Image 1 (tube, rainbow, N blue to C red):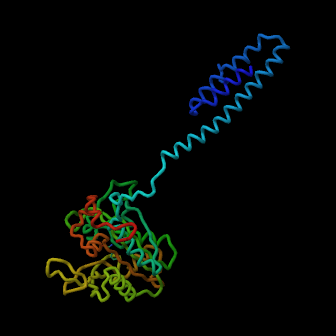
Image 2 (image 1 turned 90 degrees about the horizontal axis):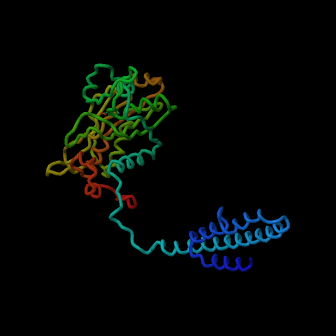
Image 3 (image 1 turned 60 degrees about the horizontal axis):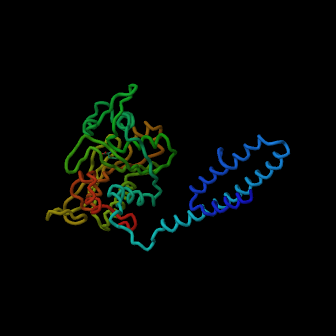
Length: 346
Ligand code: PHE
């Protein structure tokens, strides 16, 4: 017996891998293993012999098991060291800049605008892309058959339970959702996707808008003007940027205006802040009392202003991007030219 143990000890010691060791374990103490066979053979012996032999074989089995355990721990450690040796990473290798992505101009522009307004306590609000007529039109004081509905070239969706669903044509429905659900006063920005049936060099069926809304006590047109003038001067990085507010019409604001910034188009390129031309940049106005009423707000106590601008449009102007359609072609040459480094921001 001790001879056997010696022999098996050598076999265990000679194992080079966990696989080999496990095969040996099965061979020795598995269901049909050698030592298991010895134990089974005990049945044929007399009571006395069985007691003596049984104790001996069980001791042998314990010893073999202990040897297998120790060897297994050694091999696990050995195999781990081998793997670490082969899988080590050379941290001195230089990175591969060609695989670096860029921040899309739309994301970058939204981030810039949000960062600017957040200094003044604006927070970001969101709403669904699939809107209903109530939020996209009715509550915004755009009644059925109002011509403004046609001007939006709406994508309508199949009727659901009598509710007219559509892809939102502007971010203004977020005004309604926020006024109905949040407590006053409020200052929000609502960036997001909007949809209109339109496609040419300056229009895509999906584009982005960013909406602003302020509802507070004693808010007037002066607040709207100073807020937007300061924003445009900051955004376009021109301190004395000429601006003008042109009377306009939106059903959800009264009075309504469009804001223009000064530019020069005389020699084929667009220079912002110079020359005598004007460029429309956003729509704005004082929130219409009917809209406040539709959201359960007493317009004798609270007033507010709102504005909305096209994200691609201001990005194109600021960064000199000529064609809106290329924003969504996913051409990596375009993206690496107009995109922004996630690390340096430039
Ligand atoms: N929703 C308007 C549009 O899409 C823009 C706007 C927003 C105008 C807020 C006034 C106030 O044209």
